[in-house]
Length: 193
Image (cartoon, rainbow, N blue to C red; front, side, top):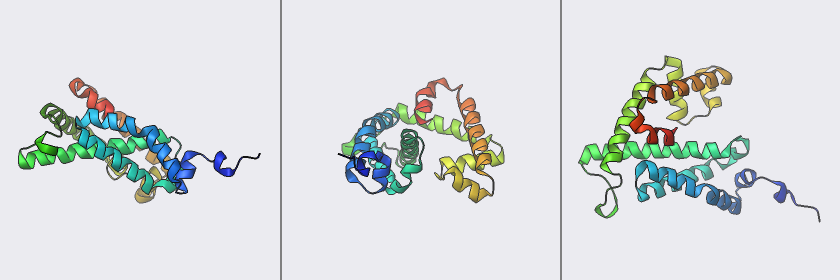
């Protein structure tokens, strides 16, 4: 019996075609690790669940791009990192606005210690980004904050994709080097990077 093309297709290709069974397999493969990482950073089951949902909603939304992605696992964890980082920023803004930690049933969504570490980490990260040369900084922010692809950044900035890659790689190395001495923030730093 000759195998059908469906048997030869990869999960990303099937998901790109809208195959919900393949998407379920993808979800089950990465869900627990995304949740665990989000929970370690936010120390909130509620936030971690929301991050998992957001990550896989985004994957479904961009499913047609999946076959072109070289390292799907890294791509999913980049999305997870961005959603986790955004959740921390939102929680900190809420804390500064109300003086309270948002959470379900009056329970803190994030412990005060985790929030303090996150606030300090974000200050250090912002300092690291501010130290970058202007073009590296622009590339870094377009990729990390606006979640543009390197090709989109190249088009937007009018430079080659190779130059974008060089600037981004140099920026990531510089940011890591700047943040490395802050040892007490290392768990948050390494989970997000």
